[in-house]
Image (cartoon, rainbow, N blue to C red):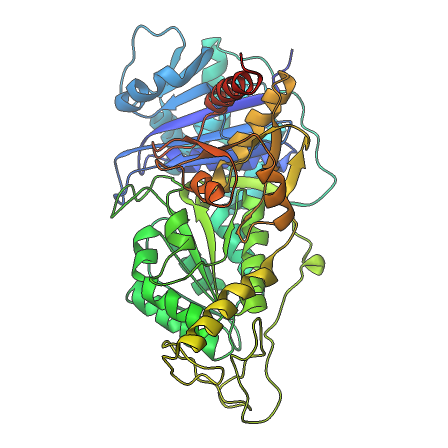
Length: 571
């Protein structure tokens, strides 16, 4: 029976082509109609150190990197020793015979990767040798690979033909060596090309594209893993009249520059990670009290302090929702897929304009570096919200009322004092108790402007619900589908909008006997927030720097469900 799913892990040191090989295989597969998703994890040094990347390709949509590895490509002995336990019983190991020798594993094949690449005249074709060997293992047609190489290296430059020739030759050599070994995993079922256009993107790329589609005009940032690629993308692409992208000297400068741009009427955004977000705390509080629209992207990593700068985690939720001193509760959008990275960026910019204040868009390292094929967004259907600008005469009371008022733009009509001290409705400083009550209620009241009943639901009548958030969505969704097939009585809820939660969703959750929340942190942060809102929530936590395995979630949800049902029926 043909395989429907194929998982390969490339492991070695940074600089050995680990990431390039995985992304190349993903691109080959998606160009002919397969679905693909990658996961990458690497150390924080520029080059060297243990690195591995996993690619999963399937005839069906994929949402997680996959639990079991069909093929391990080991670039060195340490990679083999570390990852061999993840290879399924009938899997295959390909090791770089130019780097080390491996004896005693009947599943292992030595491939002289570097030697074969040199024989093509192109030392950089080593990853193509590996892709050729992998293609033989699952009987992937050669024309898939030829088309990929031709498309990738036809760039209108001198030497393109030679590069194409050497890479196709390298693929053939990898195929020949694997064929001579007798190793095979069978055949991968033929793909079905979708009837819509697709893009192969990483999460940070999708987020940056979404921000551009949402009308972003001003971007400043400071390099910090894993958010730096957003800054680099903006420096290359946020160009033209009225656009500005710049690398500043610190995260404190980022948030203050952002506030200045928002004050001046520009749609402004920055991206950082946990340590940088901490430095922005006071500036975010200023944006909240002065009511200035800005978007701060937090690409989460392991923490606290420097922590795990290149690993994934979901441990910044409390810090993002309550980032400043005093009574502050910032709107939160947390994206869970590469596609949501695109639309979440647009929504974050719209939210900041809709309620006139800071919005935090949360993502995480596993999403930032994940490459995945998604439907090409239809920009004609994107709704972009602009600034509500005051058009009257001077004497305007900027902060009057309990919800929203148009913003004066400096140099235009309307008195505008963006005051970080408590103020009256004109914006003048005051310490009167009644004014502090009035303005505090105004700031919190504006959050109701962001309430949207937009969420996912399946099996709505079940008394136990699985509800994850952020980048754990994919693993949780695959686990949920397995639980449903096994007859485990669990329903599904999911939303990007963590604050404010969709009101109808919150009311539904309050009626449930148990809401199970998988999240990558120690404290069960989202479960804690749900409990504070009257929901019977319990977390499944993990803090390894790696995403959930579907198998683990199935086991834990089953155990928790059975335990709760026994309690409710008194068994």
